[in-house]
Length: 224
Image 1 (cartoon, rainbow, N blue to C red):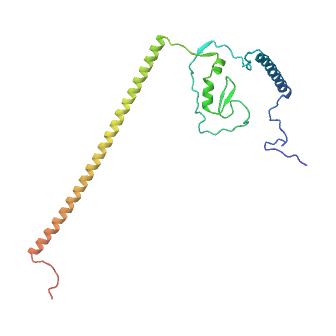
Image 2 (tube, rainbow, N blue to C red; image 1 turned 90 degrees about the horizontal axis):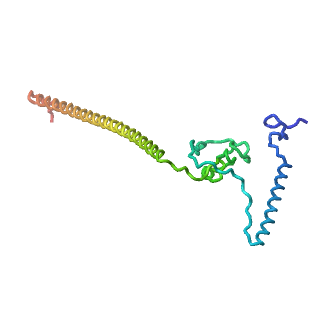
Image 3 (cartoon, rainbow, N blue to C red; image 1 turned 90 degrees about the vertical axis):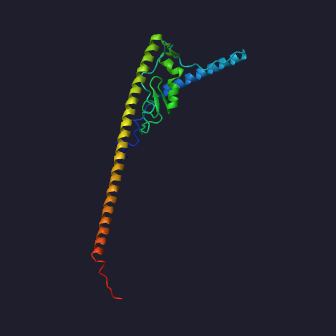
């Protein structure tokens, strides 16, 4: 009996494409974590008996910050996948190929932009980058340079706006002139039609008067 083949030509029971997990390694990690937690709980019981506060679980050791918080040089592109459809190969995995947002520094996934933005601005993420939550204090020269830059930018925006206003004004004026010319042409056409109708009426009335003067009142019968 022939073996049943899968969609990609492999055996239906072949699962070599799945990720392999070292069960012994993860079991050892779990045992080590349980031993550390058990030891911490015993220490906390002794501390409580002595009237001291219990110790919290140890946190991840983060590097000490070496510089102040810096401004981001690139955009976060929070709307880059807006309205797009993504094919997810392994929904349970973690990494940049998963839906949502991925932080390369912390190796974490976030399902929405709000959670991702909160993480980017968090203390833990900044510590991973070696930065503190304090912002660098600007010098007088930097403030003056920034003011000059913003002033120049505002001037350029004002010039562009004035240019757009003048162009818009010219377009409105052209449309108004075209509308007036069309209205004037329509009035002239109406006047011409009225003049032709009046000339036609005068011609008919003149012919009737001339016929009466010449005795041609009509060609109807005189019998009664």
